Length: 308
Image (cartoon, rainbow, N blue to C red; front, side):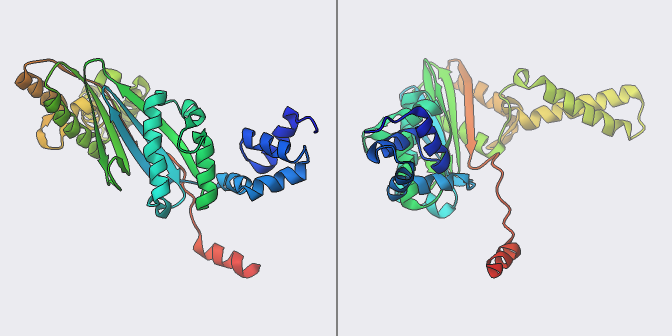
């Protein structure tokens, strides 16, 4: 049998886009014949799955999983919302959240995880799913939160089924308080985060560069009004305070009681429970955020079809 070199595996991967292990197996099965190896991958549906990887996947689902003092959140994308309703896809996303819990939210570790359901890595399982369903899919991102003493609360918005939806939020609360009451508070805070999309947790955590950028914009706007410099300074200070109220979690008006800031709600809950409550951190995933979606030109598509 011909020796299978790393360069041969690399060449096959570049021509088909299939995974490294699949390419090596294909070359072994075909005694190093590159053309036959490509055919072998195509027959297995692996090469065709790889070709789909260039297509934009901005639909899909977000999933959360909580176990004990740990919680994980993941986003898995598909090309269409139709696939997001597929039972096999939903099962994969549910399992992805569980694997994220075991892998500390590390995507590379998740992909290498050996899945007992199929005897393959989690990445290979996704490749098989792509070949079976016929759409590009990506395990895009994951994160895990953990507390030493307290709770991890979760919320899913636009739920497709339990733990799966379009927006997912995890909130980590450190406290010695009653777990049931902390869970209720945490869920309400998670609902607030889903709706209000804060960028920072505290004023101290706001990116200084973001503040300076806002100050520069507000200053130019104030100068255009022709006001004196001392008045302009106060106007800018007021605008920055408003900026904090919009983007900082603790400073936002609580969606369930807009007369109170979020930090006041947490303080009142701590007083009622007779213990300290600290929002350690939170994470919010909104499906498809940051993905550049392809703009479809229907007229151009029709013209291209007629030209064939």
